[in-house]
Amino acid sequence: MSYQGFSPKQKMAMTWWMPGGPFEKCEALVCDGAVRSGKTLAMGMGFFLWAQLCFDGQKFALCGKTIAALRRNVLSEILPKLGGLGAMWKEKRTENKLTLRFAGHTNDFYIFGGRDESSAGLIQGMTLSGVLLDEVVLMPKSFVEQACARCSVAGSRLWFNCNPAGPSHWFYKQWILEGDKRNVLHLHFTMEDNPSLTDQIRQRYQRLYCGVFYRRFVLGEWAQAEGRVYDFFEPEMAKPIPCGSFDQWYISCDYGTVNPTSMGLWGRQNGIWYRVQEFYYNSRKEMRQMTDGEYEQALKALAGDRRIESVIVDPSAASFIQLLRQKGWRVQKAHNDVLSGIRATAEKLKSGEIVLCEGCTDCLREMEEYVWDLRDGVKDRVKKEHDHAMDDMRYFVATVLHQPKSGGFAVGSVQRPR
Image 1 (cartoon, rainbow, N blue to C red):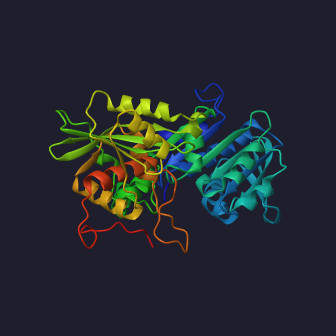
Image 2 (image 1 turned 90 degrees about the horizontal axis):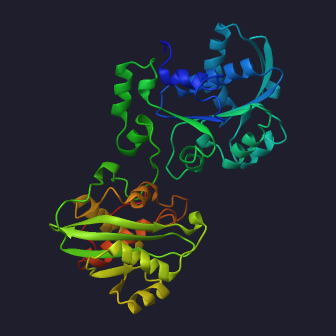
Image 3 (image 1 turned 180 degrees about the horizontal axis):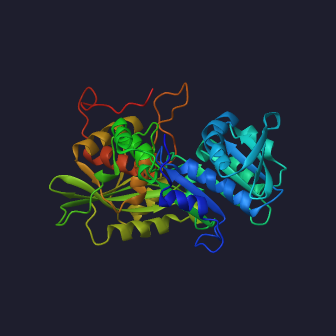
């Protein structure tokens, strides 16, 4: 690969820390995005230039999934380029230590592998001026947190890069979605940000992947790729609420006290059922549990002035069902066979008989995060995570729409990956 200069985004990853710049007060940089997008090179160069120009006689950490991977992916690419700028270095492999001399400053860089939970003990006790974590999503949270906690020198900064994982990954939730709270500069890279890639190579990568793998590896999106239950579903399948009137309405409900409660409002138009609105409440996130009465008020607000044929409720929610009936709602206990309900729901989604509308953000989020339990030795079952809107959708299909034929399902089944 020949290097044709740097793109604007690569230059930003290398210079964001400079005094007088718009991002100099940021305390961390996260570079994520597509494969072969040039983020590792740009961040690595920026990290070493920042360390050498801003510090002298200090300690830093370079962390990868393994030490061998870090040497191969980062050091072998970056050290020769620093050498071209006049830097000199000496590596003590037995100590996993690199001493770098550049711009009149000398600093030590310690190399760590964050392979598993036990790796956190390797970095514990150090005092660092900065840390670079390459492919951070492959490292355990305990190791990453320990590495960050070591950076206590004034002016220290945190540098992260990664290819995306699933949208439920802890790093995505804490360092990207909540990046503002952590004073993070987030740079999202695409292949167009790497000027060293030819159009021919970019087109090859675009041809290699499809579906969620295309979204993750080519577009650099945080899309669930492993074991998705509804792996055929893509975000563009969500539609706006159609204009015109609806001739029938239902509400489906998965009830939780500690776990989230999810309700979906379903309307029929021209024989198609649309999930037009939703209510979703996570008591853990909100730090407060709602009462049955409050949930009934939320259901009433979701229904508005529509005539609701029936409320389909999680059959285990006995107290809530009783309250709804006392309040005058017509309630049906949901059919709750998980696997048959998933098969029926998948068929209705594929055929277009049910459509998720764009405003149902939590339902669409769970469509990405709802996965099979892939642990060895288990029978077909889904993980009991990110499944609350999935359950209320399944209740609606299994109870209102699905008419089983004798002898079992006549539709193709959804298979758990083997």
